[in-house]
Length: 324
Image 1 (cartoon, rainbow, N blue to C red):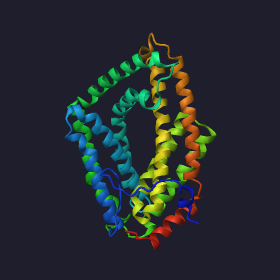
Image 2: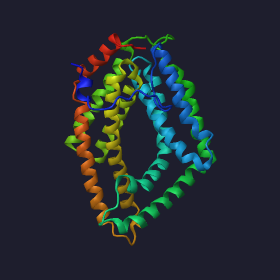
Image 3: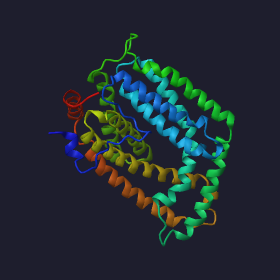
Image 4: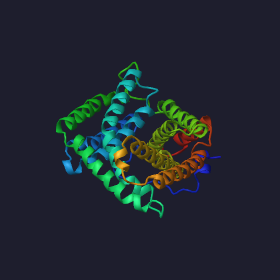
């Protein structure tokens, strides 16, 4: 039985290709596909270089998403490229994303209440002044980072350095030859991401700490982007799987954003000065409990297949489908 179709059969197919998505194409080799999507994602990530100050916050958001996709495709081929190349560039991309993370967290805090935590009778009076303070904080913290042209230039330079080195992502370890156009080129990377996501789910269910939930979220995102890239193998089934993984990532992402907000409110007492935050705290707790329960339900669907079953399905698509 088609495991992915069985577990994700109720979801819509994702077959369109918005510019930000990674999609391998028919007629490409693995090397050509990885090279092209890598170029496309670096172009998005480097958008911060040309964005004016007013639009830099949005550009940062797009850049961080592109960096996640770059790390996902790098993980897809990590089993067949030189380990030092993987370690060096993965770590650098991680550091760049972290450098941009402060702006992202400030933006999250400024909009989380409205998007994830709608006001109720118990929280309405507290929400308005808290929202005003969070928006002001976002403006201040964003200006400190994105208004600093030297810092932005440094981030752009780091990204450009990784982009130049990324040509090695399509070179087989121990040689100057391109990646083989066969399932074996992606199997180790795909297998590791799937297994780590499954293990991350188990850990988060057993001990739903902020750290373990966030780790699971990151691993689910890597798998989502890899399935996104491999959509060409079987658009109908993999499109449904991609949609399910996107749902899981969003649920865990909303939970993480509420955790970030909670920590900030605890660390910066001035944000809640003169405001009754008890109702907000209870609302956050209830909302996070609901998000985590839904994430476990969706995760059980996404990771219902064993690693061997999952890989057998993708291998069958590679052999039997339209494949590259």
